[in-house]
Length: 79
Image 1: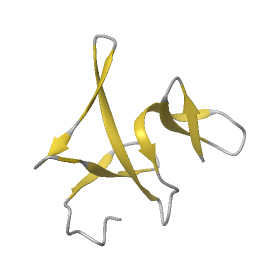
Image 2: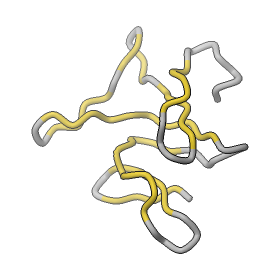
Image 3: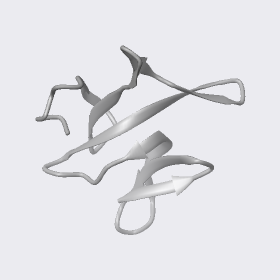
Image 4: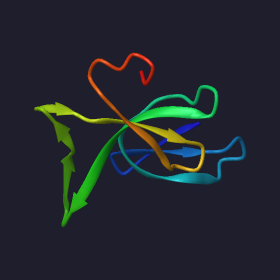
């Protein structure tokens, strides 16, 4: 279940326990054990967006928060 805290998204379980830390700018619902997220790296007090070719980079993660793959703009399987 996506959860929002301090301007970032993470994931909680059905009991409200944080399972994946809030570190994403956007977080999609899990489907078949995978979810698409947009990662924000923290440098000092500034949240930086990872960009690829001038666009925000999407990542496909598993239910532990491990990156399965980086999504490309034309990768419909990822989105």
